[in-house]
Image (cartoon, rainbow, N blue to C red):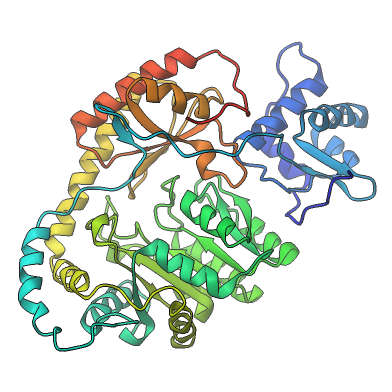
Length: 481
């Protein structure tokens, strides 16, 4: 059967040449070197599935080589399944046949869970519960169904947005059962089967699973974890124009998993691109309050301040206070929020009242959140030090916030390492879980939400696991236990 031509962005010859860098390796044949270099960019997620490659002549001119060499390299890539072609339509990045990634094996006794980037309940949670028990009496005479959430809690959330530079009223806020629930509500309203949703590459795995569950199609635009800004705004613009996604899902504050944060100038440019295309954008702000180097109020304004009324912010107390509260929120225009409330009736009838009262109490304690940030800063530095000691060949950019390091390994063995690590008593999430179509085999996410002694032991075990797989050939067909 002839390969179908995907809808995706196109990369130019000069830009691909910059990405490939010094791709020649010793005395190897040029075609094999070039094919290996392009394959590595695919595995690292820098050339997402569906990316259209430049014409042979354009790429030959950009690289300063013959068209014969380019053709031979593309033949190799077609044989390995990394490139597909059709006469008259050119060539594009494909994915070699591989099994679907399965869930990670459950942690056994004595195993260290290094997969969840989340912390235990913030100190003061029990006191907030006690205070909420008293205040609950004020609500027991009501029916208890609050499809938008308690006004007092919405008022506090709205005030925080206003303080960050995005004027907001309680009428623009709806309380949800976590940020993921908020995203699913928006997804159900905006997209249907076959619709495309623009996402970053890499990105939050549960968002990808939700998009697939809705039978929509994630459309990746690669981030550059080593760049000053990270976001390819020109690539976003091209994807919006060429593929017309129904909406975009972006994490511009301490992005999960890279830890990148887009600056104010970049947000202005990105917001302009989205507004010009009239493309709604869901901005995941789950980690925005975990600014480990400064005050969240002095950071760049929310992306919604630049993207207009089509921007929908989702937030959560899960990373800042406790995942067990299962509370989040949506901030949007009153018109969009009204539509979301109507869509919510098909899913649930509101969030629990008691938990909302508890969260309201916790949001009044700014000092506790400040102490949490200071604690996480110490955890982050402990993890960075442990990686330097036990895994000196790994590289990363120290994030200024969030909950994880995004580490680059010298070899593309992330999935194999995850399997080996389980046998050494540590559970890790391989880079492939954060890619739209897998790949990212040189990358792995390490959270710093555990105490320093557990972090040290986890990295020590990870080092032993890495030694057991170093030098062995990686396989895209290797299952994740």
